[in-house]
Length: 235
Image (cartoon, rainbow, N blue to C red; front, side):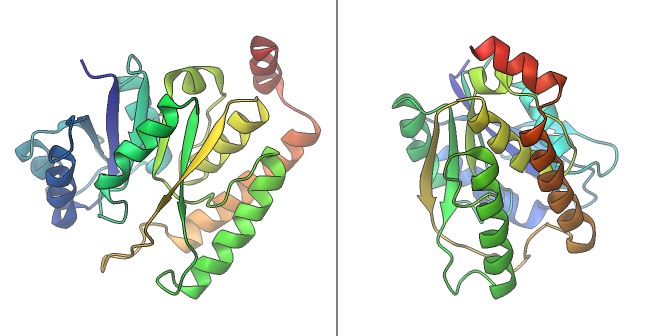
């Protein structure tokens, strides 16, 4: 069993997933890979198996957050889990940098994309706005709150209340982990947008993310029972 595993939530990703898996296999050491197929209908799970990945499949599309939670449960005995997207926007070659930051003492490592012209202007604005709000909530710098390329340590996953089913889950984890005192680090990654575009659905996911930030703002002022218990455990 490997100490570090790669977790790939995937939806309708058959066209790009194979290349991502090949590039992961080229790393030294080769990480264990788990693909969580979020109800795809294009053969995503079959591609994952053909390239040697372990696969969990949902019968229908449940959202990225649910895919991440299923992956965390399946990999609960790994010391660290690196999450990356299935569409090639997160270069697998940067995975060792996340592991190095973890070995240096970080308990959650966040990918940080430069806000260059390679990022659509609407995404640059939304990313800057949400990252600024998230940094204030976390009490620690979070330069790219919407980047899903991350490393989560087992101790952080076990010690942080994790709720939510969509893209908002990643924001909540980062904010709560930082507020609980887990050590946060960032790793710079290239800004890459594939021809498939983002899997974020603006009409569904953006209100969820804003709603999550609103709830986390209230939680900052009046922590709920789960956060109070987690804070006591960390004391």
